[in-house]
Amino acid sequence: MNAPVSAPTSARSPELFGEHFAQMLNHAAIVAMTSLGHRLGLFDTLASLPPSTSHQISDASGLNERYIREWLSVMVTGGIIDYQPTPKTFSLDSAHAACLTRSASPDNLAVTARFIPLISSMETALMTCFRTGEGLPYNAYPCFHEVMAEDSHQTVVSALFNHILPLAPGLQERLERGISVLDAGCGRGLALLALAQAFPNSRFTGYDLCEEAFEPTREKARARRLTNLFFDARDLRNFRDPASYDLITSFDAVHDQADPAALLRGISEALRPGGMYLMQDIAGSSFLENNLEHPLGPLLYTISCAHCTPVSLAQGGPGLGTLWGEEKAELMLRQAGFHHIESHRLEHDPFNVYFIARNEEGKTP
Image (cartoon, rainbow, N blue to C red):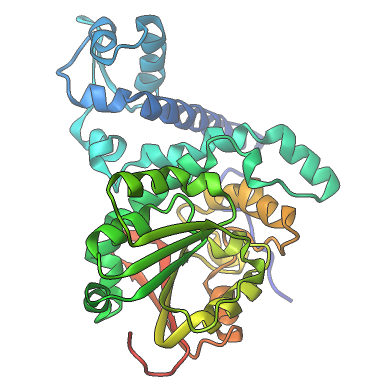
């Protein structure tokens, strides 16, 4: 018989647990206000100023002083911002700025903080899901594509050329010569935009269920006169496009699909001889007991419960969830017809895993 797995906390009395949970409430409040400060540009403003009063920060940011003063109080009591009582000045330490400002990307944790208020705004809708077993469509989530695009820019786009493409030797040279590329479940499509600009001889296509997701990027492509980038709104549950692409990518997209297994089979069939599938997803195990020490375990399971599972179920999907896990991902890739599968972690990014899968054993792209 397997031994029971205990919750990862040392708080084993009502008093200790009460203290533990009170600290969690404080942290939740700080994260929610961090998201607000990020969206308002307040961390960037503070990083550009010497120690300043709330009035000086108001003048620099163009925001209301009374609200700024209250927000600053949260940040000071939360240990995010420094405060000098006698001159009543506030400052953002450089070490904190390195984790909270836009110039810190891809290490800007304030971007990830945006998931918390987004999830909280869905509480009433999720109560209905719990009672009915139904899901939620993508358009039920306010600003979802914006939040995901900002997060994806940090994890994928910023690492694309120096870290991700080099995982497949020879791929950049092929892109320079010219190949056909598909991003299945492209979202905002920022990775494709960067690739299309860098490799004008290659042709890039992005498919996503929601046209509103990639429409802003489509406009950017038109403004930059890119003729090698195309987007199309497509339901990928019946994706069939045999032998059409040299490279197919998916970035944090497969587990949300209506039929992930069918999509992976379609991707396998859509690759030309010598083609390659590059799939990025969340690093973690398919088994809860293996994720107890995951540094973002609670956040990832929360995102799964509030978003990834509902949007899959709303499409009639299996609801794999955010932490469907590397074991299940590799199994499903093999079942889809991929014979050669490699998994890679990037040294600077412990929270994502990159699979490189090919139909033909030993073939390189």
